[in-house]
Structures are given as structure tokens and as C-alpha cells.
Image (cartoon, rainbow, N blue to C red; front, side, top):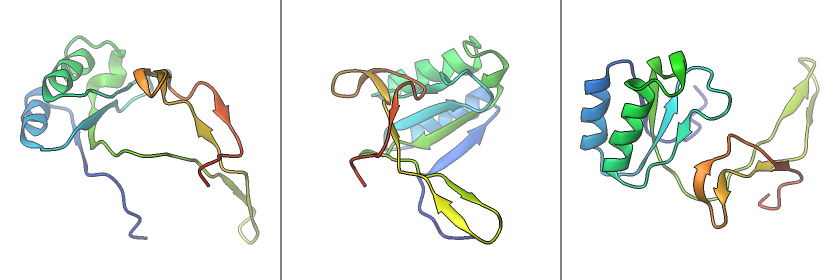
Length: 126
């Protein structure tokens, strides 16, 4: 509707179809358990092989429980990320300061995704 650019993505409930999609794309992917996963349902594989292993963790081994019954496979984008929230009464809009969170647990954005532990504002990237 508003033509806001976003990463290429597809949703899957079928494991084999999700595998085939991962094998077909030329870019790195992000795997997201579609249901509630306590902020831990996002995996950032570096290779196609890691992506296929991560998919199995989510959909077959059910490491995120029922949250992994559906998975979102998204094109992985690089660069800084910030969140901006606003409050409105339907007429007036008041913006909150932009915020960022620590995405990966290790130095230099390595390791597992933190699920948003440790946010800070204002975000220096904006």
C-alpha cells in the first residue's frame, strides 16, 4: 500500500518446500519461527548448509515448539537498524527517540541473535 521497501521473503508450513526455496535463492537468508518464541526464534545462518540445518531445527526438531510450525525465510540485509515508535490519538503524532538493540551476542556482530536484549536510545545511526 505504502511502497515501503523490505527484504524479499516467503512463509512456509511445508518443510520440503522451505528446503527447496533455501536451495534456490542466491542470497543469505534469515529464518524466523513465525509464532511466539520468547525472542529467540530468529536464526542468522552464514551458508546454505547452515540455513538448511537451522530450518530442520525449527520445523522438524521443533526447538521453538509450536512457534516453528510456520517459518518465514527472509533475504538477509546488512547495515544498521533502528526502531522508531510513535503515539497518536488519531490527530496528533508524537515520536519517541529512535532506539537500537544489540542483535548478536558476540563482538563484531558474531554469535547467536540476542532477541533484543540490551536496547539503547537515542540511536546514534539516526
